[in-house]
Amino acid sequence: MTAQAPRTSRTPPLGDVGTLVGLVIFALSPVLPNFVAAIVGNALLASCIRPMPEDGRFSRPARAVTGALCLYIVLGRQGMIWPFYLVFPLLAAGALAFVAGFGRDLLASVERGRLGRVEWALVALIAVVAAIALVAWTVLFRPDLSRLNSMLPPWPLPGLIAAGLAFSAINAVLEGAIWRGVLQRWLLTLTAAPIAVAVQAVSFGALHYGGFPSGWVGMGLAGVYDLMIGALALRSKGLLAPVIAHIAADLVIFTVVASSLAGA
Image (cartoon, rainbow, N blue to C red):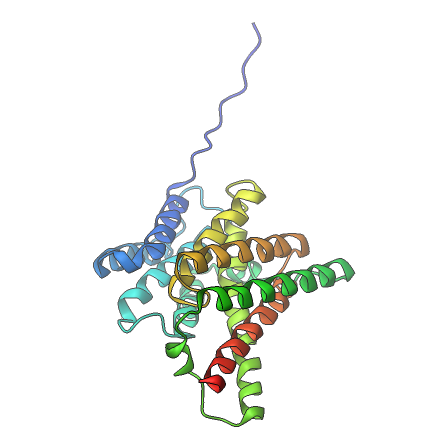
């Protein structure tokens, strides 16, 4: 009789299960009471103070960011105000990482990566596909852009161009750091790459229910788009290439919103 190798459990560690629960709560926050997000957010942040058994390298950064995302829902009572709902999780995770000693792991999840000819070609392809999808969604669904129009500064054209560039760059860096950086790097330690990219894309899509594009269709478009830039982050082993692709998409969004205001 031959000895059998010991069976290994594929059940995610408790801390990682908590992070997955936090992502679900964040996605469902529009239909859940605030106290649910408050409980989950505080529990996740508290669990980062000390490492939990079987924590992987990126487990605590992912818990910290997800906990802060949930907690923002409670603190930001007036809604998901840009860029605070993105800045708050990163600042909270950074402060906690400094105190609890997992700062290196947090920084390791947001590496630059490579940007060669193939990556540039993929950036261009994704930018074109995203631009076509965004313009088509605007034309077909004729969304109400009044809320976004009210956020534009009453500046002359050069100032609006500068504002568009600044918004696109800041938004792409912040969203990239959270979803393609911290969350995707953590998910890659738990499961196969396609599943890791898909899970963070679903979370990113849920964020856009009230954004641009919006609604259920907008969530689907944002999720599919994030599959592409998540895969690009995986290939380039970092955030620079997907951030550039994301900037291009955000510039299209800014242009559509500004054009609708000019035509109103």
